[in-house]
Image (cartoon, rainbow, N blue to C red):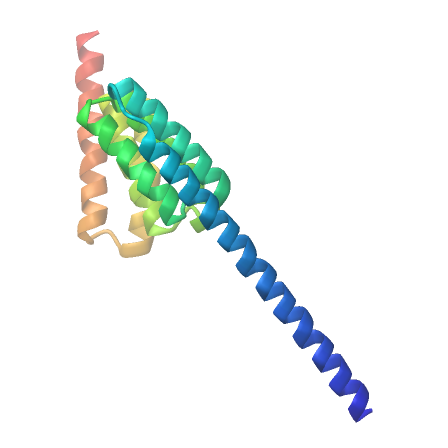
Length: 179
């Protein structure tokens, strides 16, 4: 019995080592591919903002496919694209980017995770700027509800979310009184 147990343990150990090496090799291949993509994209001269946007979107899609949206390589490009939209005051571009981020955060972290709730509130702000008030209100209400249960009603983050919702409701009532 002792010999059989030893053989089974050795077999399990070899399988674990093989699985580890396989995972390590796959990570290495993904890393090499990402650096190849980086090198290729660094060689592209950005003639104007449209070219920059298209290049960044392609780079982001490639990295998301290789690593997932939450991976640092993907988030690096995601943040640069966000800054580009912010610099251009392209709120619709920012909304699309935030929606993509929110979907990923809900999937990876869950609906009640603080990062998900922050993204939800940020999306609400951008939607309000784009005058998409109903969707903005939903985002504000969900983030407020989440932070209220997570941090309590008196926490400064919960209060900030509450103020965002109040401002939106004030804007909505003002807009409806004009029409």
